[in-house]
Length: 456
Image (cartoon, rainbow, N blue to C red; front, side):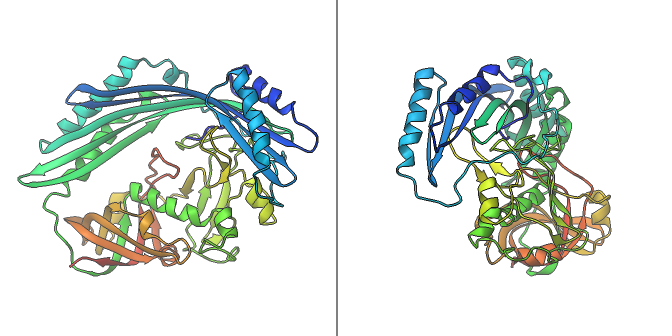
């Protein structure tokens, strides 16, 4: 989850502290203060009992000072006034060790209004520890009841909340809070000596709305339908990506649409703005203002308004995502896509909440119209198997064959290979089964033609 939010009932002491730091700026300095406070809870249940319970709180401040093209940064995991003063002093000292950079500067307000989206749920804020444990226990019970061949490896509940204030000498001043939760389940399906794994998720801001039944069903199904799997014959065929795999695939695509990567020559899409890079019915957006996205946010890591950016429209590459820094270097502007992991780091650049514009058909309807194909249920080593510059794509996979419009035998220990360029152009259908996951991209069924499957 992102950590910068819009103005929604944040502890006023946080923005007051950020203002106090900024007010101490000296002549010729740009100063930014990023102040945050958060809490995380995680529960792991095994055989009905709590195996692990963690509740952690954190707070801290990160300060950037820029002077004469050099940047100094320092942070502290406390908001104690004496420590905060030391952080500012240390950031100033670190300026002297910075490498001169003509593009170094803080973000400035760009006139894009912050969209009001509700990212705080009072029901979650008031949810008790025993209720959180019960959700994990209930998820385990539902999963075990789904199929007698199922064992549960672990059932988990997790939530997080955070409040942030950002202020700078360039006019940035924003604060906000957010929270969210999810459950996850890992399964094992046994049939004699054979064992296969599965998983399921449910995401929401209100724990009472978590779809435990869906998570349990998917975890059981993913494991049991792999029983009896064999290694397939090698050939070229159509692949159907399960929503979770599609979300992982979009994560790979996001790295090629990152403005910093483009500037450094590390993207296969460099110098291709305005070109057709995908099938005409492929539209890819980065929309952190959609509250259904797990990584939704109303402001980015520099305090600029988050916004809906259309990256690929009708198959045509429209834009890359930028922070203020990468935007300056590229001769353009920030797209509200600065990302930072919290007070311990400085902003980078990246997609915030990717989603393909969905189609209208379910996975079952899509499968019913296919002849020789394979449903890819899981992939292994995806990021290490992709070259973001050349586009070469190769990853280990497992799934279920599709034959004459129906799911057939399960298959394992094979690879699928193509190039990212080819796969985007060979997209044959985008499903309508949007699945919100605890990650930075939404999942849905995706059909890609002419992919190499290497097995026996």
